[in-house]
Length: 190
Ligand code: B4P
Image 1: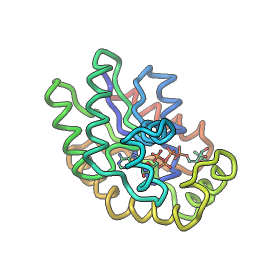
Image 2: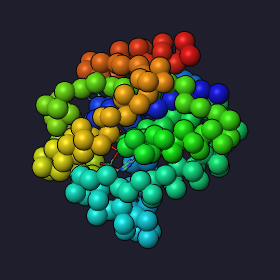
Image 3: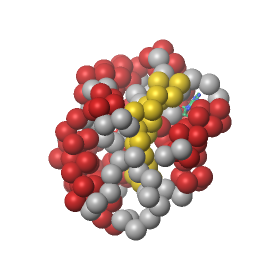
């Protein structure tokens, strides 16, 4: 079993690279962003709570997100491994993920951190906003809020995984396939 965290600021290419990782390594994809967007689309109670935060570019509460992850892991426990995309996003989420995995005798094997500068992130997200209708991609202020949330609440997770010797840094600027080659090598060597 290989369990990977794909990490980076909004627009770094987490979802994009996760798709390629799944295709090559047959891992189960857990994207908290996708799960939350689905809840919003279906107008569930959880979705109604999450929508307010997501549309402002804020993080959804740890309590909601950790509950979702727990259900997903338990549902797909017998598989080649998980790729966590957009989760954890706070130190509290990272510690809860470790505890959850510990309970079932599995662990995170690697964290892959995609590094992209803010100017490029804003350019990518505004471009995506023109094509896909995601409200949080259509407004530069909201995108800047997401980057700020990332710097303040999410970035400290890098040190958390570094301490566990699991941090792998990958330059997220370049062609999608060149970036994937580097990621592929890291996962193969685990
Ligand atoms: P996410 O869905 O995780 O969205 P994201 O950070 O924007 O990244 P995504 O994976 O979609 O985009 P990617 O970088 O692949 O989160 C959305 C919101 O949900 C959050 O703001 C938050 O409110 C909430 N949320 C989610 N998880 C949470 C959690 N754990 N706790 C609390 N709240 C949570 O790609 C971006 C664009 O760049 C794409 O258009 C892509 O085509 C392009 N791109 C990718 N690679 C490229 C490359 N190499 N060159 C050029 N363009 C590239």
